[in-house]
Amino acid sequence: MTSLSLASLLAEPARRWPDHTALVEGATRVTYAELWRDARAVAASLAAKDVAPGDRVALLAPNVVDFVRSYFGILAAGAVVVPVPTLLNAAEAAQIVRDSGAGTVLHHGLFAAVGAGAAQAAGAAAYDIAGLGEDHEPLPTFVTRQAEDLAVIFYTSGTTGAPKGALLTQVNLVMNATTNAFDSNGLVRNDTVFGALPLFHTFGQTVAMGATFRVGARLVLQPRFNAAEALELMVAEGVTRFLGVPTMFIQLLRAAEERLAGGRPLPRLTSCTSGGSAMPVAVLEEFQRVFDTAIYEGYGLSETSPTAAVNQKVFGTRPGTVGHAIWGVEVEIADAGVADRIVLLPSGEIGEIVVRGHNVFAGYLDRPEATGEALVEGWFRTGDIGTKDADGFITIVDRRKDVIIRSGFNVYPREVEEVLARHPDIGQVAVIGIPDTERGEEVCAVVVARPGHEIDVDALRAWGREQLAHHKYPRLVHVLPELPMGPSQKVLKRDLRARFTQ
Image (cartoon, rainbow, N blue to C red; front, side):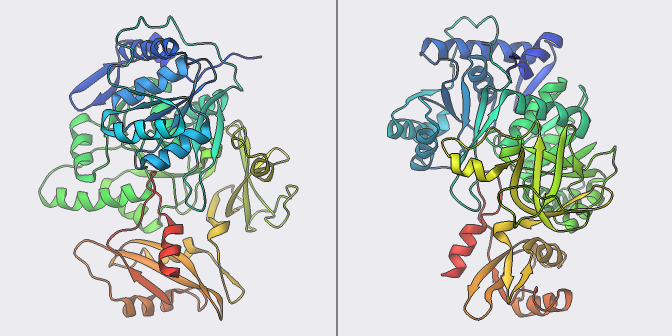
């Protein structure tokens, strides 16, 4: 068996570049040597609390230095990290703690009530992470783990159903951080990466933190994303790389308008990476024009560690696509109608996106039936619908569960969203299907106005009719002040469907 630990993402830069700054949080600067020493002290503290290798430890904290110390401390102790989103209440957090089998909950002081409440409800011990490990001599190094041992249990965002625990191994996450750092994003040690993505989420954990540490670069943390403050911080700290979900890019554009109007500079970014959900091409084009930088849109899921594909310099980029599969991974299109085996489709055909490679998870915790449905013949069935062209560029059409069937015709919400996002009055849009007794489902657009604009529903419906095919344009339009977001800043379409179906 091969020994491998995700903790090496911090241990190695601490050995190679001990005095290089690893983290920035406000006025706090932490070197790699200091961070690794603190993580090993946390590991020693956990061992003293009878946390053994393989035990599950829940972690509830925002994007602060103590999150990173605790995260790598859990790994150094040989335990398994169970990240808990900070937007959950105590009952929701308790469900994750209980389902994961975590016997210990580490929480930030701001979330003491949620953390302690969740631990009590699940029969676990709770500890505040402030000062954890200060009274313990650091472990000499991390506890030995095998490549296929569990490292992290990520709970899926639940945008289309109940969250499930995705089992990610040491090799899953080490390889994904490595390929993101070197092959996909081309990070270098003098980069400064902005850490606004929630570290409890796989995108922030692996693509931001993990990849940054893999090359020994610097990570600037923002505990809670605020676009105006983010721009100020990026300028002050000389940030070169920004990673975010589409809603973050939209908010940065609005904040940039105010900043430029006041004669203040924008950050000089080398490149940006977008993921988590589909980036409207109109937003991508506007951001690239305003910030004079490239956005590399990618695709991934909790079950794929997360990155499966991304636009990459080596292949060239194509707006509206998620580029090519990352190094060592295959992404193909399969017949969605064949459940028990994988039937790959030729270029250009629409089908289910399937993934095979070092990034594919070990299954769902205690859900053998769901695991069997998802892992077929060595491939992971994503449940997403897409195409792959003759040049290898992958396009995400939509989630299979989100496809609207109106009068027998398939309507892909993303296609409608792309068109509506170009309307001058629309800031954000989500398209959903609403049950209809005559047509099966009706196309419904839920929109948020741009700042300073108003949306005329009748005019928008007429505009949509001009831009889209007869069966695609939204007959139903609802205007909201904001869209409901999950912990990872994805739009919760299930909440919209429930609200407007009623």
